[in-house]
Image 1: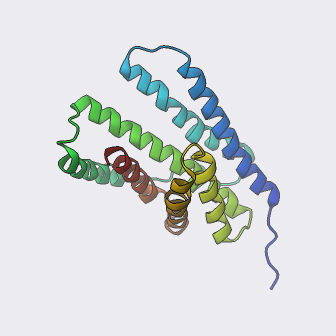
Image 2: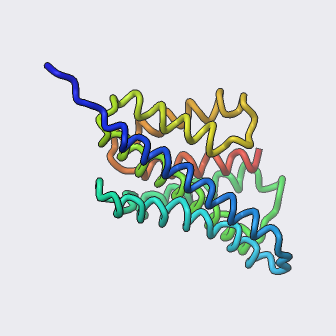
Length: 201
């Protein structure tokens, strides 16, 4: 039985897409930091808008242009909403005395957390994994490349040990989960919960 030939051009396209997303994202974040914005809500929107632009819309457009697979957002909104609501209740009771947030702050926090989780999971666990899978790479390599790019490129400003011991193994687990489930609902939920716990601990 002959092995399937790996489409290295598609692998390069996938890696290029991640690098382009990160360059666009970093450039936008840097340029927006040059302007003084006094309104907190406007500052928050401007800070999180690049996640939607460069980790959802750009990969979606990129995939449509190369025409490789269905790039629709594969999540179950009702499941994520219910589980995040339950998680926030638990966080509030566990850490409620540490930091009191008003309702508006909680809503902004949840919205921003969901935007980050959905956008990063969409890019790394849906688009990138599907592009690498279509290139005929073995599943283990698909998971490892995606996890490496997430942990060591996307989070290059984090400590090497955090990336090596926490983000890389977690990314491998999320990649495996995305491949097995065929959607990113639980990946988004785990990502959101991880970020929320790191913020409150």
